[in-house]
Image (cartoon, rainbow, N blue to C red; front, side, top):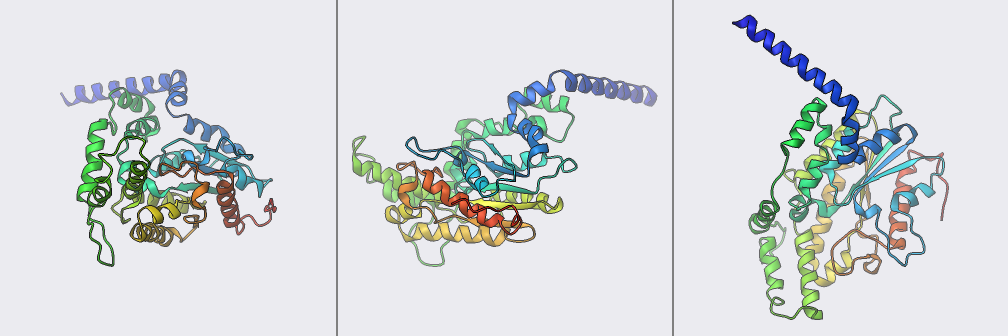
Length: 347
């Protein structure tokens, strides 16, 4: 009986190995390009790349009337004309996806000299963590999990990944806003995001659509929900960035975390000093946690004034060309220590 079981297991292993081999030769590359073109881009461009720049929409978005349409990564590249900076961009992406992209780099083949990863403060908030786009993002990396490719394809066909419904994700977001306590080193009357949000929102619910006062109240509430949180090691994005930093340290690749500018000016004028305190406290947490070993945090948090943000009625990290130039130049200055010989003053 034991012998028969062993034979059946061996036959199954042989069959699965054969199927995996056939899949790799036939459909895998097509599926990978269809589902996760960013991984394909990384593999195809690695040989010619000195620095990879991983980003969400902040690197892609420009204002229609901008006289300069270059992205942040391209502006940084102006200062290093002899270096090839390759940007890999996908809207709404966060560190949980960046770490998968990172691990697809073959460090035995033309190892990059540096990795730049966008550090977007809003990606740590409940709305982004539980975004309805998360299922699509998780689906995009199933085929590159550390299992045989045929098995990953099987998981994809079964939807065997973080595949919550939009309703489930929304409820998780609402639960976080209701239950997670805000911590201040001073007395503050609101203990949760929900309490703080309702304190403003209740005055605008009955106003007609398009009313300037209602629009201002809604924007105020967006700022509260986008930035009112205390960073700590339990945040899933912190765990993701820890993995990114560890991987770069182990592979001796310098890591630059490009902390994006937020609209501190509007956060202050709309909500007040308590929200600004949380934003700066979280910035300090990130800088302290990751400024070690071979990692540099490039702090742009309050470098861009309010009018340079493209979206004036929402909380995003989208900048006009002046804002992109400020961030690109600041990032370029941070790279100078490693690439002093390649640096050329651009403007």
